[in-house]
Image 1: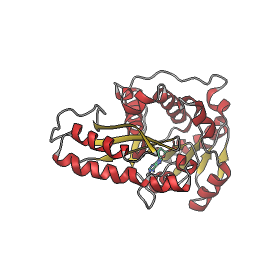
Image 2: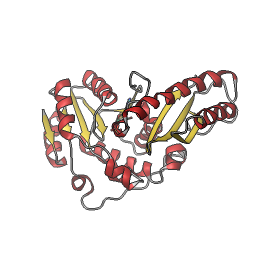
Image 3: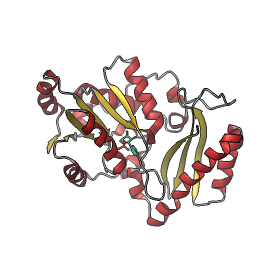
Length: 282
Ligand code: AMP
């Protein structure tokens, strides 16, 4: 398996392939790989001649220094996992300097308001960091298709907006959320949970499913109240937000409309670890 640490080496390798019109699929990640990442990789391997995966813990998208510091970094294990999946995957695992060249700051992005909701509201600067890294990686890899998980649904919508507004010729493909057997959405941050918290966290998806049921016959406001009340019963959790939003605009729903698609979005702390999840409500 080929592993590149420098963008110049990766570009030199990819450019003849691009000239030969080979289709390039790209899966950007921050590593600590799990089945969620592998599901994106499998889609890319199936749909493209060449698959590139990046592993880079991007400092500019972290608004919390401790979260960045404690983010799991398991490159050796990640490489082994990819090798076991498919030896032809091209890995790009740069150092911060290769991406930021001594200037580790974000550019500013306007995503037509998508950035002002939920994760954007609670993690100031997060989506500027995401836009900065995704745009740079797209420039380096020049993929035809790029794969993102619905686990980070707001990020997926933001990346779609980014390519549209910046005329970047990449098809952005959303892939369904992969879950543990108990329903917990897979996440690299789950590795930081104790075994008991990982079990307790199953309740997040259970409550999301109950919220879905309740939303069928009740208003958004009533559904949100239900979720807030449920988590008050479980003292080990601290709910940051549960919101119901229009999938396209990510604006909170006031009046339900039959032609719109809605999703419930949650951010919640357990053992000081912040987890996010979401569920389609119709
Ligand atoms: P991350 O390494 O957490 O930045 O994630 C890299 C990509 O994997 C992003 O597009 C995520 O949305 C996606 N991803 C992370 N967890 C999951 C999951 N449980 N199911 C599907 N995709 C996921």
